[in-house]
Length: 121
Image 1: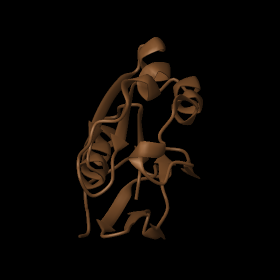
Image 2: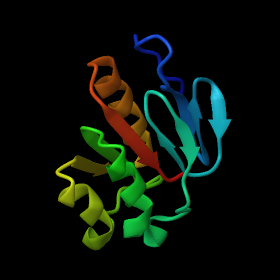
Image 3: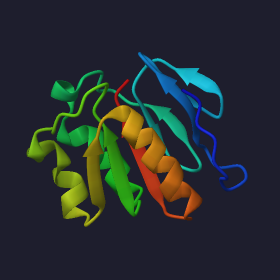
Image 4: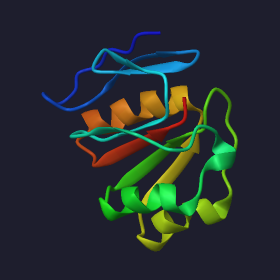
């Protein structure tokens, strides 16, 4: 599915997703990634069960307003201990399936929010 929405110029945005991939600025990614307005980085966890506190500590250090965790093709809640760095830093966190995280990221980005999406593909 393609996603189109008016977004800030030069900001990274999700432009599509499907089974086994997401697109950011029309570039296809088949591995887990972290996306912010300014950066796109590979992300170590390949499955929700592998998500650990250290995977979110670097994201928390960047001090976004909210972090969206995309859990893959289906929604599942991660181990609460893994989310601890975000909670300690008083950063909002929302957990949803990856497709919903992509759509929600673009909406929040268009609103001018400091948002990060960490998605498992």
